[in-house]
Length: 268
Figure 1: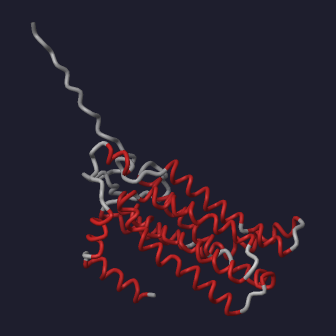
Figure 2: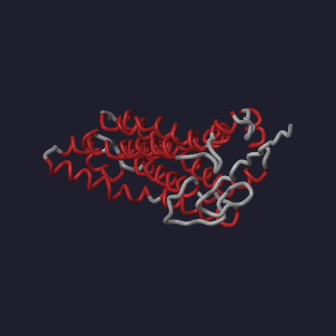
Figure 3: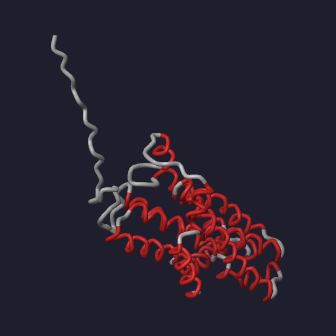
């Protein structure tokens, strides 16, 4: 009796963009939202943009906030420093989080953890509480790290610089856009009938909601790598699961990282 065997070969995964051997895109199509490469690009810059809008939402409304909370020039200056200093610590942790859990989960988690601080800005009642909400909101700026990590995971050498540059640049644009957004939102709420000391508080629900929705969009539509998310790939054995000690050791012993840190620091 002759036994016939049928060998079923797995169909190679197809992508909308040309890819290399690691399935990283070799082309960058700005106006495409094709999964997973360009979708990750748009999710990364939009979420980063939302965090910049939230972090710098207060300065455009400072004349009203100052009068409502009786802020001094020192209080305003300290709050401004706090909003940026929070990001310093968060960015150190974000790189490790991306290595361990993937940029999708790392960025969405940070955005959701810091969104309450934006909501709580609406109930700030003293200089200290105002400083604290700005400090914790500033942690969200570490999404810069996850955005860069995500782009480097999705795009190959010939185009990764473009992807990183545009994602970071458009994300940073949120710091300027909020100078227009917040006064418009405040004016709209005030024109509806709210007094100015209530209107500025209600206005903070807009960046807070924007930030929250961007996190859910990442979780629902995002993907860590061209071939899937970290957890699925680790469970299937297609990706090694890293340990914190190993990631930290390789991070601090990589001379390229120290060179980049020094040049980045000197720029500031």
